Length: 89
Image (cartoon, rainbow, N blue to C red; front, side, top):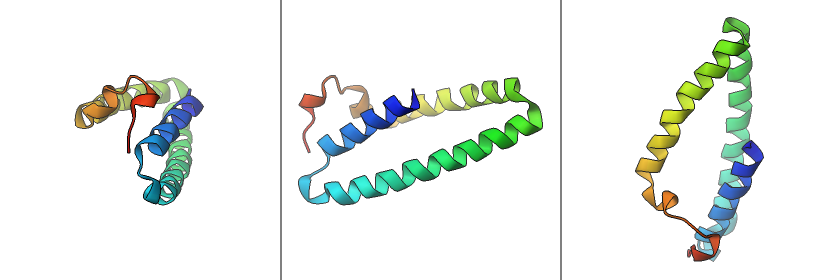
């Protein structure tokens, strides 16, 4: 599922970014995606070692659900995207 979100997010960035800024925005996006994946894997391994795999899974779910909702509330235009063809820079 993570790869699906990466593809959707990258497509949204490509379609919604003005031509003259697309390369720079994509580069910064890829740096943050790479860094966040590495940090997330480290945190998952560390907390699984401390508390066990079951509690770690529950911690991730309980932490991510409110985060996703808050992003949707802060950026309502993302919730309204129905078709990628409707995006304009």
